[in-house]
Amino acid sequence: MGVKIPIPPFMKIKPLIISLLLILGVVAILPDQTLNLRCNRQLLAAWIAMIAFALFFLKNPWLRWFLVWMVLRVIWSFVLKDTGGEFYITLNTIFIFLISYQFLMNEVRKEHIVHLLNAICIITLLHLLWMGMQFFGLWVFVIPLNATGGKIFLKDWPLYILITPMKYTITGLMGNPNTVSALLALGLPAFFRKRWCWAIPLIWMGLVSSHSNGGTIPAGLATLWLVWNTTGRHKYWILSGLGITGIIYLLKKGDFIADIWGVRPRMWWAVFRDVISKHWIIGWGIGKFKIATTHPNQKICIYGMLHNEWLELWFEQGIIGFGLVMGFMISAVKRYWFTINKSWISRIAFIGVLTVMFNGSVNFLFHVSPGIMAIVWFVILEKSLKKEERNYAG
Image (cartoon, rainbow, N blue to C red; front, top):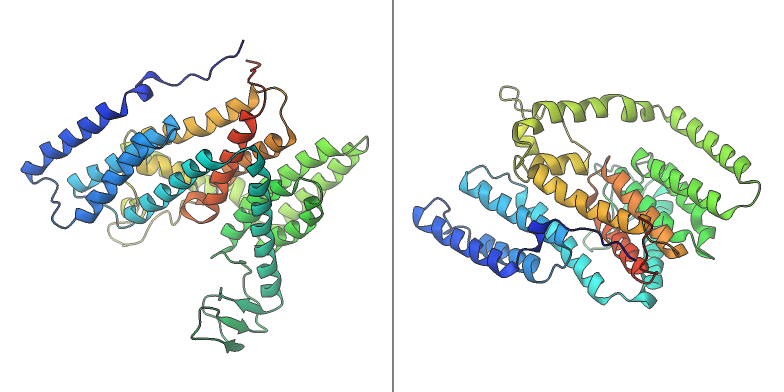
């Protein structure tokens, strides 16, 4: 007998009823002039498109109501005249991610999973190639900020080339070390297959060059998992050697202790205590972190950048938005955990999902392009489990 994963009753309400309520709500607001649409016709069209997509096309109930809540929260901000300047970019980015998720869920079949994994590997290797060129002073298309010296070629063309002896931070095709580190960590589990596994040392060279703990730590844990599951009787010696090497590397960097036990956790607690707790149910609104944490006299952001996707989600959309996203991720983990006869593909997809969850706690994963790769891992996990026996251990 199978055990179905329960879905809260409120998430089973017919979409037509919800859409009618939304239409009535907008009509009720319009005569009051609370929401002035004369300058926001494009926004209204975008909101309607997002609501329609969520209610009629987005099949996962957790993500469906998350998108609905995001749109309602933005409309609410307009009503209260407290919108933040970055709300539209964030909303559009999440909308694109969700469209990509649903498209892949509709189109991907069992025979397509290996192609998705191969695509992840190719993208990762492409970034490693770019990082290698940058290491030797050849910058193509991506140019470091405030670059000085060297020779510039094709300046007026999209393919901008800089050859310089100066050493700059290596970022591959990404904008900063944290982002390229996240991309390499997310790409690593796709290499836990025959033939592709020979490129794992190259990924580690890229991770070390990025100097970012957000990708290095989950990649290290994933590598230890691979060794545990693929080596023979000497696995304990190999794991001990790798573990000691990793600890020495992190301690030698110096910023590991500060990241884990120092400045960043204290900042997260201060933000939760002083800011999030004031509007913990519905949040402050999308794109309002700098506004809400700027000192009124000094005109500077007290906490800088949060670097925690899940805490910022709680800040912007309250416990409602946070709970819906956590529900989606926990349901994916639970489905894997209670499915028996797991294939190797589903196992490495689960490692990919865990990497997403870890990196999101120290990075803005879904505000940047590697977020698409994170979406792909959830799709691969779901599709690989659909091909397993539908028996549950719990």
